Image (cartoon, rainbow, N blue to C red; front, side, top):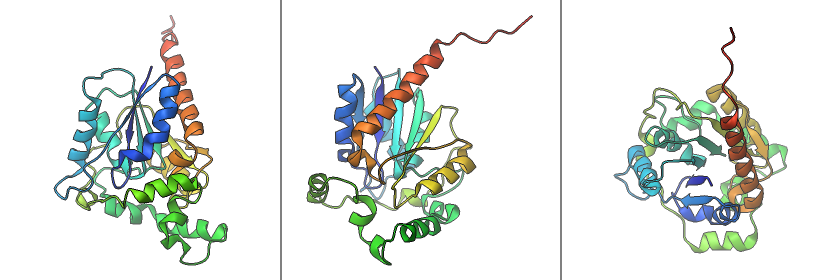
Length: 243
C-alpha cells in the first residue's frame, strides 16, 4: 500500500481531490487530501509545507506527493522534511531557486503559450477570462456545480512574493503529468518547462487543468503504475562492481 499525499493548487481546497481519493482507495492505497492555509494572509510557503507534514503525521513509508498547479512550490519543501519516495507534479508550477510564485509566470512566459494554444483551438478573444472555460471545460457539469456551490476559495498573495528557498530540486524521483487539453498550462508548455528545469520528459494524458476532476480513474491508474515501477526498481539487484 502506498500513501498518496495530495497537495492542492491555489485556494488550498482538499475537495478537489475527492474523486481521486475514492479511486486510489479502491486500488488499496491510502490517500490524504491536504487543506492548505491559503486564506491566511500570514501564511507563507513554510506554513504550507507544515500543513502537509502535519497531515502526514507519523507515516514514514511509501509516501508519494501529488501536487496540483501551485502545489508545485510546496511539494519539494515537504520532500525535504519527510521521507518521500516520489513527487508527482500534476499540471504544476515548477520553481527554481530564488524564484517567487509571482515571477514564475513571467520567467516561464506562460501567457504566450496559453494565448497561442487558445487561438489554436479556436477560442474567441476574451474567452479565457472565464474560469469555467479555462479550468472546467472538460469537467462533468454536476461536479462543476458542486465546485461553484462551495464558493470561490481564497488565495493569499503572501507566499507568491516569497522566493523558493531550496538550492535545488530534492533528490527524489519526480514525474511530471501534463493534461493534453490544459488551457492554463498547455501540454507543450509543461513539457518545455519540465525539460528546462528538471531535465525530464512529462507524461501527457487526456484532460484539462482540473483533470483530477474530469479523469480521476485514468489518473489513479497512472499513479498506480508509477508506484508499481518504483517497487520493481527497488527489487532489482544492485549492479555488480565487476572484477
